Length: 357
Image 1 (cartoon, rainbow, N blue to C red):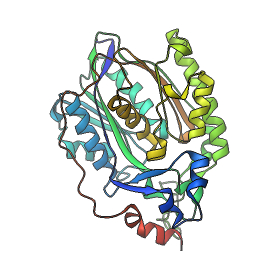
Image 2: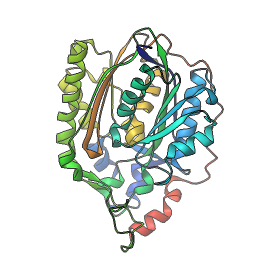
Image 3: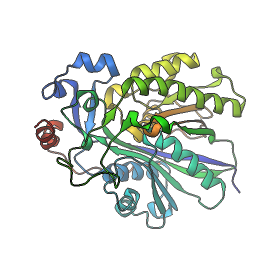
Image 4: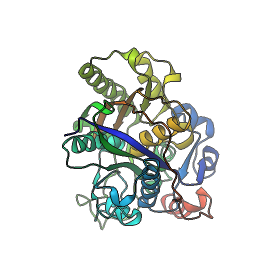
């Protein structure tokens, strides 16, 4: 059986419509300064298509980078909290749209920690020898949940997708160690209530979702929780903090990212940060940031990449990746989203109108 699961392909898909802080200030009682000073976010993307479209394009781009065909994939794992429907799994739609007809598929919902959870699951499944080509994607369309009467949450999130391809390897590479956890006693700190079978589907304004969000509680638990998981991973590998080449954290809040860097005693120059451009895209933040780090030449063969995440649930996780030999894609995909002829505010127009009534 293979010892390792190498990352052989990577791809991302960010929808074209940009929602700036000034755009939000035109429909919510907020300002660019208020948003930036509290979160580090300047803009985010808004999708004009279903979540599965974002995931499909990211997956096809990752497969092209790996020099692989969709029909060669035997497992597709999609980390998401914003599926196209409750039934079936959104991964089923992605399989249909990409042509991964030979793949077993399933969704994984671990909030913003979903991609780290997915990497551990997929790596383990490759190591059993049962699967030889696995796509792990993180994809979200969180703007669909926006309540524009609540400025504390409507300014934080954005849409996007990222994906990687895993293949067996005998060389030391891929996810070498990871550790996951959850603080379920505090799950109410981040919740979208009345959206499943425990809710009342006949309640007034049922279709108006509202993200319950306790920023202070999440900040406190996020920094401590990610630090706890990082200690587990470094301890398992016998590594010191200074042996980390690059940190790719979940992009939830600039202050959380800076606090994690401070705990690890590493300069921000060693931290991948793109929250200013995309906001919090939940399970998509880490794979998108990974893709951009590769595009920018920040990752070298053999580098140690530390992943850390914290999300709804309250889930948490960390993992250490040893990058393989290749940092450039073998090919490029022509996969694209359908054209978008609307602005971000126009896409969100009905939601703005109905949630502010």
